[in-house]
Image (cartoon, rainbow, N blue to C red):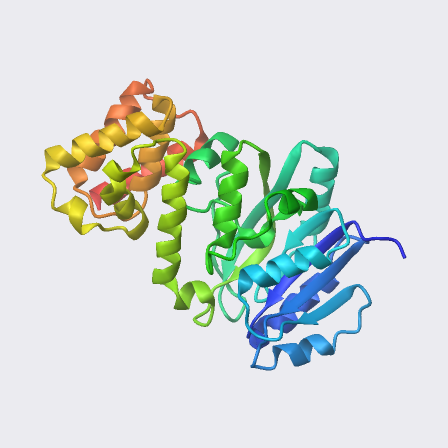
Length: 333
């Protein structure tokens, strides 16, 4: 029996309401050589019953004896995969028909890249599009964003299997951000990744998903990974812990107690010691101030306009211009 070109790994846990739609989307791909590996993490809502009724020969079904967590299921899927390329899919999302073919073609034709991903719009529990999401496509900007958050939609990713094996798969130390941790290692090791300007999946937002029910725990894990990432650029991480907490949690009691002059000095020192040039500092300021964080408006404006001037009133990337404009609007309103 010939091995498939792509293995698609789908961890499943209590997504009975959405699982059929996910399965149907995986049955209708514009690609002719793939297997789907479902790893049921001991669901108790009828999800496994749906999986057992699947008749397609290239769909393989496995069930864990108990709930071992997402990382375990992902790593089990990688171990069971037979293809040289591995794609990840969430069991409550919808895979678009072009996703696997476009990803495979890119990695096959660009063998120096380790992974490829795409864009994903957000849908609600009924499948209605809630938001057209924007993604960071530029590799230099990815290296900045990865310091404080995950810029890649996990459910759009395809890896070289060899890379997953090299990095030991997904860390079991993280229950909610194992993808962010893995992407961080790959990107900060300067391996080549590509985010295609193509829609690959529809990502469902609903009240029963882990990221919704465990938001605080997810942010705590995010902070741990961010600290590891920033430390690779700036060894004096302890000096900026209160500021980094502000970036992750949108508030930081210790940072907020500082005088404005102290805040300005701390942020300025962080920018200078973490980023190699004013272009990256300008992008980072536009990135963090385009979000809601508890920092005085005049400080935000000071940093934005200072780096705008240092960059000769020019935007070197389209995304920078968009984030700068959003930051200004946040300050005004």
